[in-house]
Image 1 (tube, rainbow, N blue to C red):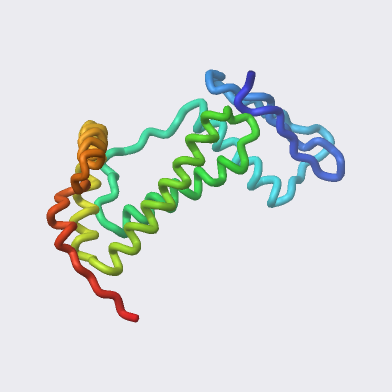
Image 2 (cartoon, one colour):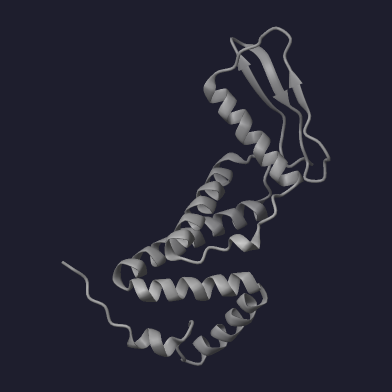
Length: 180
């Protein structure tokens, strides 16, 4: 079964170009060019470009450069808005995605929305704390292993009624006021 089905772009009912089915383990993406036509609309060109990018990412996923881990509230917000928007486009656009892949993308959209909303709010009401939290998040993301360890530890603390998070005693003392 392929991850992406055949797609065709046409103008005036004449086939201009088409993509053959593409699976995750395919080495290439097969593109057919029509004989009778040579023009596609701007909308069709954008759709084709997006479809080619999705298939290319499936066959050869881009490698995240961990040196680019976002370290400020603004960069975290931007990173999650970008990846959340991309995941949203894939959720609504991938017909050949498995249920699990679609569920994971949907979960990322919800997570990105949550991170953006909370970081943006914290940056408004407590900018110094938001900056410190951004550094702590970046260090955890950069390390990789500590994310899993902290989730495990925080889950245990939460189930036993303890506060969770980075330096929870400082968070408890945080008091902010908002302008009306």
